[in-house]
Image 1: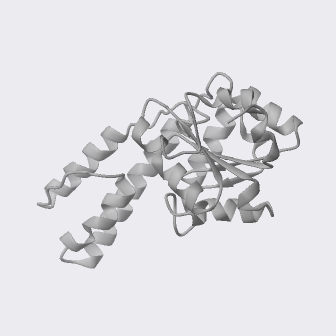
Image 2: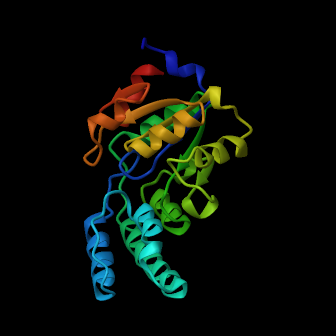
Length: 217
């Protein structure tokens, strides 16, 4: 991909944690807490995917639907608590602000599409000093189907009256790339501490940090 090619896109949709801001959420602790609650109920499982996906798969292991719903509610509250605590320590990557500044100066729209909850997402963007650049924020509370479903990305595009063909989706997780591709957007994979090369290879462009986007503008 040659230089200046990203300048033809008008909407840049970023994942938040691990892409624009440093990843502060302790997923292992969340999984440990969930495992403990399940073991108290006599349920022993291995986590293969994310916590949200795993909770959906657990439904068949509960004899009583009310018991399952209470369990989900409990885990969701624990997740929200973790996310809010992480948001209070939010820190942007060194050149995230510079990148968003330049995108804005070129008249581009900027959005954030995250599986995080709404309150924590707003707090994260405020604490990291990025909120003023964001034209649309779509969290898991705003949609029925989150990434990797394309719906999550499509809602953001529609909100700003843009088209998929003029949109770039940027993220450090395979869910970002899958949702962006399914929605018909150009995708950029960011190699972060939690991402692995096998997933981001599916992206149209691979970079080691968001600041590299600057060289394509």
